[in-house]
Length: 517
Image 1 (cartoon, rainbow, N blue to C red):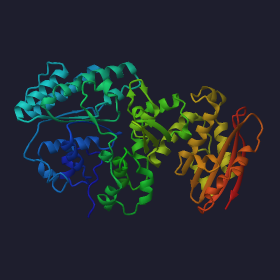
Image 2: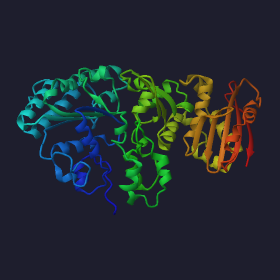
Image 3: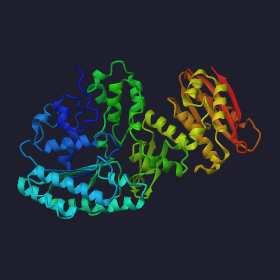
Image 4: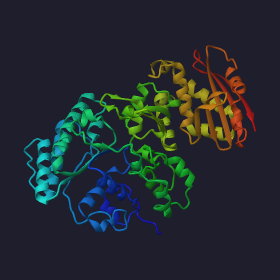
């Protein structure tokens, strides 16, 4: 199989098929949705292919059979029945207020009416325009209407830090979406997609027939690329790339089923042939970093959180939990699921190296002033010293990092708990590197504070806080608890590192080490 065009930034199914681009077949999922129900909701992070999936559905309902030759739905879809499709998208641009929202929706509904060859009634309010559009489309085409809504929540998220505007956006959208319930008799199929999963009570009130497939295992891979997709569809692109590193950097997103890669990451990797945080660099929202900082999150355990199904679904203007915020925006994913009676509990983790290193690096910038970063404290200096086993160099690096933080920064930083602030800065320095970091590493004798694996070395860290003078207790605890035992057979050089931090001096006062080969 020869190489094809990479569909970077292409969200139009027809263009992908006619231009002979790579295409990962999602039509089987589309067929399953249509066969199994009527009104759906799907939440996925940005740049996961939601818009392309909606466009694929639109082409299927439009009966454009020739575009689907060789795909899963080709022999099973009813191509002789063509349905009118109404499409609403908030994917492009930023909507600043409800007047602009009204104009945006009204303009799209008029465009839909023109495409369907019917009168739009633009002088009515937008909910009324949508109601008339659905009924008139059914009358004109003799089939019930398909409604596809892309990024249903973006007007709210664009104003998320302005609570009053965000609430106005939510209320306006609630009135629009309620039309879909009232016009149920005239509708064949509905799919709304977005990033967040706002409560049905607050934005989908009245639309109580909406089936949420966000965490249905069978649809975990509806958006994104699976390992099999990478190894088959994109096989011509893999030559010269390290397959294990691709998996380590980009795979791992999970919605209780098969894990997937973010398509944007892989397409840019195949184009540029370099591992980079392509998805993270496209625009991590400032409000996310602000929220994590304001909430004094403890970074060493941020990638190991638990949340109930109800908590992950409780996404409201002015009231969203940290696990829900990180999960729905794509910075945490589901590691494990357990059911306790009727309650579902999820364990959350970073999906991959891209997210873990990029998010912790971004948070590190919030924990220490960027303009006070001394020479020699860039993160890859630390990496080089870890690879070389230069423990004295690691000691110097970390002491320099903390000495550059002014006293008043410790007091004013929202993470005002002393131990939490210190541990978060220390952890972020390591977790932002391309190394394996495990916090609260469990053994039969206790929990080690942090284990770091890089190249052929394993570093075991234990942290203590002291008032004034060093005590040696941090290193002694590693010895007493025999934390190194579980690593003695892995073939790496093991470094024991006991670190003591003085609250009075606000710096490391003991960096005690032992090394085993």
